Image (cartoon, rainbow, N blue to C red; front, side):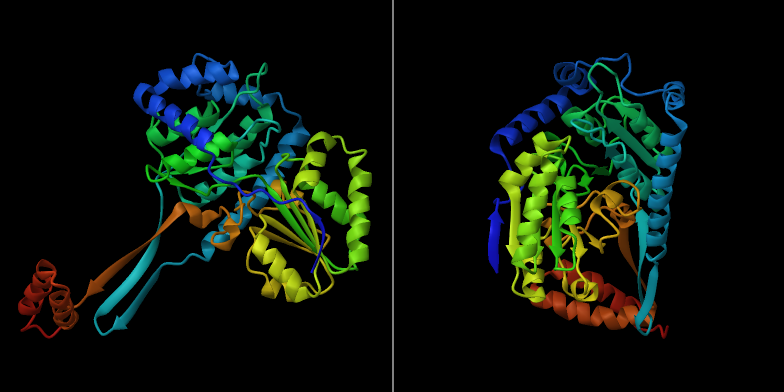
Length: 425
């Protein structure tokens, strides 16, 4: 393995200062409720409407201002997300099996009752994020979905985001951002009932708030700066690979970028292409920092080493620009979402193709996948037994409990052995 460029990817770590600020805010919000929500909304966003919740009339008037093409394109993207979520749901079947005579064990998938979706604003109004958390929750059967999105300074709110939230299926839409938004949904402030799961991306303060609120409610995952990994052999197009690297670099100065090549000439050609494209990229002020500080380029000695390097990095998004795609799809294990072949790209997954873009970062792909319909389902087991089976299992349970000295447990088994001792079934 040869290192051509080493930018030193920054992992998402707990920042003590951010943690302290968020902790103080959450305490204030829990104690003072909507008064604190309004205080922070004014402080950070200069936003203090009569109501943070949009009425149905406001929603429809907002949607009416949008171009027809934007509405149709959003419907197209959301249709793909919905169809994929529905197909995922069909794979989640209930189970009941008789593991011994008279002992029936099973599980069923139960949707959580309430979800809070956060749709970020900030540098880019990522309205496509609405469908990524709301649609899988709705397909899963969640009863109540509340959505929050931050205001746009000087504009109130971003109309395309409101359209996306409404079409995705949210029951209530609130224009409030940051820590106050997730606190409102988690604590159940005002007339909002507490949610069971918080879902959606956000800045470092939102991520830290979700970390601290975990346990009070569930969360989808903790996400740091976005990442792209690309494995490319000599059959790939350096210009296209460079284009895709920069596509993620524009997100954030801390975006993670790793290119794993199978040849040094290709690696150097791609670096030249990155510099060439940066010179004319409209968002180069951000992308150039990301590439300079976080861009990594390796030359692997073999496909096996390329897999090892990629799995160690565990990128959020991983593109394959290689001839032998089956080798990589069969051997790679750590990634958030995989883009196979040059015909697809991260932007397709982020916006329109139907897979989810809320994905693990900072090596979390070693132990979790991204958001999907199953994120909003609880797989709950159950047991059913005949009297004869209860008698058989009870005798074993009694002896096990005696060894553990858990005598009250043992008694619950003993009484059933005695109760069913004369029953055959």
